[in-house]
Image 1 (cartoon, rainbow, N blue to C red):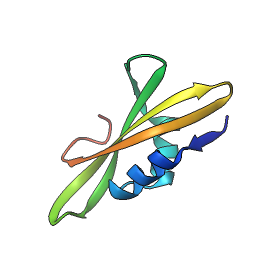
Image 2 (cartoon, rainbow, N blue to C red):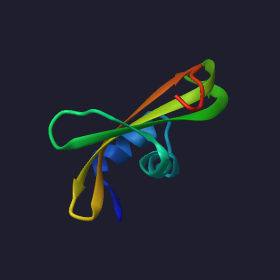
Image 3 (spheres, rainbow, N blue to C red):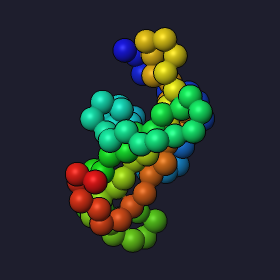
Image 4 (cartoon, one colour):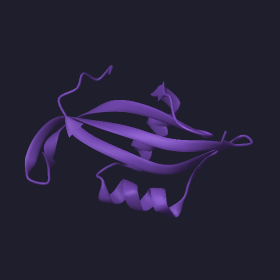
Length: 89
């Protein structure tokens, strides 16, 4: 299965403090959530222990919205949240 990251998603990854490696890991190991239509959502919490926009955060949560096209996963967009979640959440 090939992962295709569209330009819009690449821009969101960069501006929201994520990495393509984290997106790929979220797709392979993340928790699946319900989504509207033909899109699927997976979410995963990562250790962060760094500053983002002037504040320290212990964790980073990625939410990856994607669609399946044949055997490929097409990443539509990525949301990033910073906070204190447990890694298993």
